[in-house]
Image 1: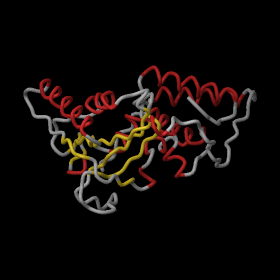
Image 2 (image 1 turned 180 degrees about the vertical axis):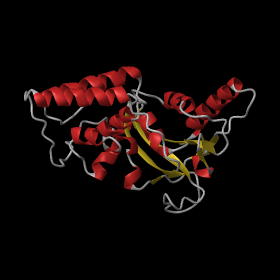
Image 3 (image 1 turned 180 degrees about the horizontal axis):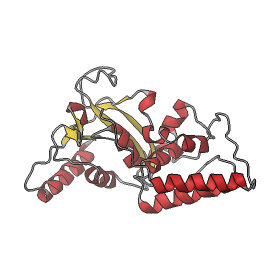
Image 4 (image 1 turned 90 degrees about the horizontal axis):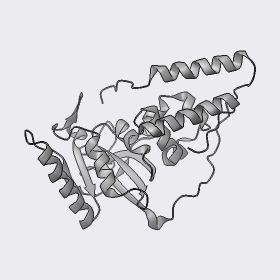
Amino acid sequence: MAFLHSSISLSRLLTTFVLLTILMAERRVSIRIPDRITEPTRDLPDNQSLKTAVFALGSFWRSEAVFGCLNGVVQTTVGYAGGSKTNPEYRSLGDHAESIQVVYDHRRISFKQLLEVFWSSHDYRQVFGQGPDVGNQYRSIIFTNGTEESRLATTSKEREQTKSKSSSVTTQILPLGSFYPAEPEHQKFELKRRPFLLQLIGNLREEELERSNLAAKLNGYAAELCPPKIQRQIDAKINEIIKKGWPILRDL
């Protein structure tokens, strides 16, 4: 996978550095970096309200960040789908595509709304690739569970095709078979590039990080892919914690 150009805002990094420098210089607080902790059990929606969607739209590092900040999204996992190889691995994908599994509360966000995010987050006219990432594993796919999802996916694809008369929409619509979670080092990739944010949530273990709703949101925040309003809300929350000097972020 081609190295992704960092989209971290220099101004945000400078702001955080200045705040920490001022606070420590004036000895108003003492930032304490905690040992690894276990994330407390959260009240998640009941299973009847949870649904799962799987999409492929290029690099799964960025794709996970795109969906993580959406209100109603409970959990994100990167992995492999759309192929025939059993137990694919990053260095041995076979014919699978890099994909993102989204667990969401359908009372707060619909499959149709997820489709809108899917279409707006990549170039579905590019054949087998996205930008500098070229290859079969980067192809565009909507995976569907059942007739209604298939209908919604088909309708949305037809709509996008009318917007792109000069070129064809290359997105495939396929029934979802097996989804294979990727290796731990690929989960919450954008968040892991910001060690300070990992410290803010208590240095969660890999398995906790993968299923954490908070980590999913911060993964989007780290890549600056959250809606502007949510980006500002998280900025404010982090700055408040820095001022207090106890970097444990529990909720957003």
